[in-house]
Image (tube, rainbow, N blue to C red):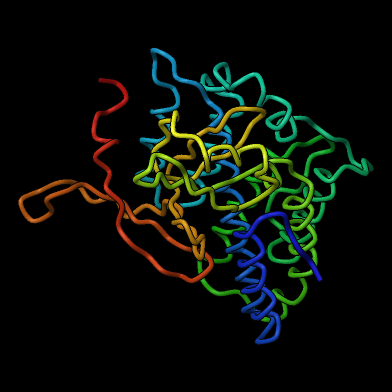
Length: 294
C-alpha cells in the first residue's frame, strides 16, 4: 500500500485507490487530478521560499496565480520561480530542495527524477504519440511542462478511450508516486498554525516531522498569522494561495475563477478547490489588487 509523509497526499491517494476499483477511466482521471495537485503544491511551496525584493518578484507570480485558470499557467509559474528573476531571491536554506527540480538527469539514471520523467513520457505516448518525448537529459521542470500538456490533451480537449486510460494509468501512477515520494518538498514539515487568544499556537501537522516547532505551543512571543507554513531549517515560511484549518480535514488550493470587485461583487475573489473532496469556496483577492507593474 502506498503511503506518503503528507496528510494531503494520503487523503488524495485514498480517492485514487477508490477510483481504481470503479473503472480504469476514473482511475486515470483521478491520477491526473493528483498530478495537478502535485504541480500546485510544488509551486506554492517553492514560491514560499522566495524572499521579498524591491521588484516584488514573488508578488508578480502570486498575482498571476490568483488569476490562473489552467495547470499550464501553474507550470509556467513554477518555471519562473526555478529559473526566472525570482530564483535569485530563493532563501539559501531552500536551495538544495529547489535544486532537486532544476538538476538534469540523463537516460538510464536511477534517480527518482528520471523515473518520474520516463514514466510520464511513457504514459503520454500511450495517450497520444505526438506529445513530446522526454529529452535525453531532463529535469522535473520538464516534467511539469509535459504533465500540463498531457492534462490539456486528456481533460481539456475531449474524452479519451478506456483502452488508452488502461494503457497509460500504470506509467502515470509510477511517475507521480516517484515524484511524491522522492521530492523533499513533500516530506519537509508542513503545518497549519492557529493563534489562540492566549497568544500561544495550535500547531496542526500536515506533513513531515513538526517537533522542531513544538515550542510554539507554549511561547507567546511570536507573530505568525493563521495559515499554512512550511519549515525550512529553523524558518517557518507562509505558503501562499492555499488554505486549511486547525483540524486539517481538507486543504484548498487556488483554482482560478477570479472575479473583480464591482457594484454586484463587493470584494474581489478567486476560487479555492479541494482536490480531495471536490469542495470549492471563494477567497478574498484583496491582497492581489495592485498590478505588478505599478
